[in-house]
Length: 186
Image (cartoon, rainbow, N blue to C red; front, side, top):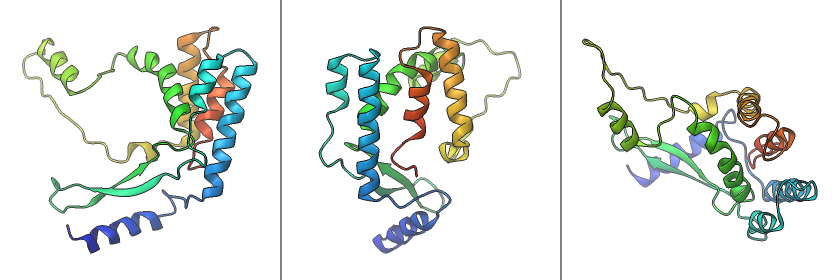
């Protein structure tokens, strides 16, 4: 793919205001402050310890603005740029990893959970299928932007409460705030 074409595809994606919102440095700073506020509240209420606060607070100052680029899908009949927003060292990198560690147990407990391709292959090899069964695969595109945000948050929080019961690692309200107030919001 020519550089000119790749740049043009990237601009078309960025101009789609239904899926991308311009990210300003002020928004990144505000998000960083929100993460700090949530972290401090969790610490004050004894949901996290001092070591966790220090780890969650290790972000560059000022925080890094996420970078948008496209990854060319050369295996498609017509190559195109798949959008990537790299938020490494952004204001939510550490708190996202923290939430992921809390939610991993829930994901792994699901009957449909498969860790990776090797896990899938092992599962298929040890599964006896009835005669005449067809295996079918699906390629779901843009799943994350097609799930209504509030519905996704509500579903995650309900699964969180069902899984942990009265012993949630952090309050559900805090989890909801973290999930709702990401760097691309406002």
